[in-house]
Image 1: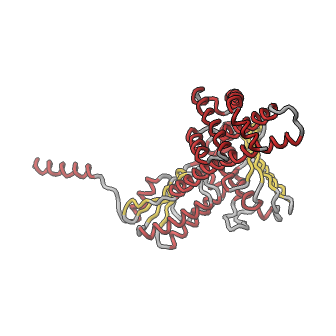
Image 2: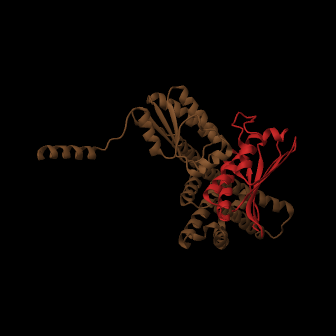
Image 3: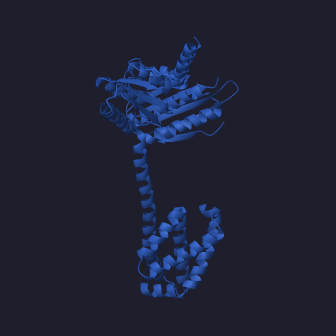
Length: 289
Length: 133
């Protein structure tokens, strides 16, 4: 029974394709694919229907399906294009098969439905899997990228290390911050560690708690932790929340924090130009005498 | 009066979503940056409480706009275990999760109006309002 239907559909592929193309074409406006050029849309549709027919002919030719799904994913077309296309194909071919028989009883009807499903189901499964697989891949890549960015530690000078934090801090990231901070402080032999929270949008009790813990841990290994980049509105919310940050020094900007760090490590910034000018002046004054 | 919008809290990252919506609505109401930060922090605290203690819940935002005043109302609802002693939970430094214990009393200070109802086994409902000045 199934092979008979298959033969029928393959032999009459032209009229089915025509019907399918017509229906898919009318979907374009309502679908997300409205911005795509008509030519590309029609070519892709033709390719799509070819993939469907090769798949029916070869009992699911995976190579063609894979290539096609990869192309659609690269084009960035929505998944609904594929599911709509296959749904329309299911309807069109069912309709076609039903009109080909003079007497349609329930057994015949269910046979038609079953065989059409048998062609379409594996295709849907495979295409959706390819799609979600590519999403999962992107997500995992982004997770890795995010983790790499999450807690960087920069040794700027002997004994001074800076950790700039940007973005939301969640529990996982807080753990990373603590680990990197302690590991880095010991590795770089830091006397002072600056935590810069200029880029942290909200400092709530949890974020404050993690920062306090990190600073306390840094203190335990013998270094000083300075919290810098506290914006005025953040300062106000911290006061409103009643969070006590008096146990370690805080500064409004990284610049001030760095100056403080230099002070702690017994250094200060000297302007070379000014010094040279002074020397020149001295030389001049000597020459003048 | 705008229709209210809600954020479901299930995962830790939903806290960020709630916070962003709260900040966005505060901005649209014309709150200054300090009040925006206050509101975002309060949302963050309430959302985190839901995530930590009740596991799931919802935060809804509503514009209040009448002749007397304009403001943002947020309602945090969960069906978690509830709070047994509210006055204790509202004290600074009281915590059951090893945190700072500044969340609820902090929210009360960050916002202008604060109302809390809790039933053991039935969940907690917190309403907080910030007026535009």
